[in-house]
Length: 145
Image (cartoon, one colour):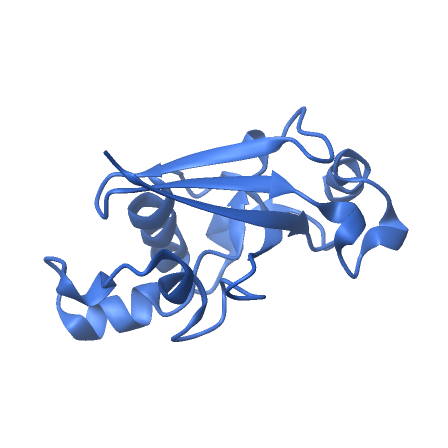
């Protein structure tokens, strides 16, 4: 049975963009593959998100975030510790826009991370975020597209 890690997510109201426009798109793509079980291409539109829970207020925080929450030792896996530190020191800040289509405030988005035996469940909580003035989750999603 997989470990289930639950948290919350809100959208940072910046315009969505193609993952290929990042300075190191391959790292972003690898993070999405290894941590969220997602395969993306360079044209894939991504949305900036913030993930948190009661243990950590920012899963994207270097050397703390999600690793603290999940209690998973990412450095024990097959890849060299240096690569893992660079790759997994930060949890993905961007996820494919297509995964958020039709999601509303308080809906749950699930990810499967087979490489580390973790299932991630994130509740859409825009109205509890610092960006609540932009509206509910579904409204902010439309705003950033």
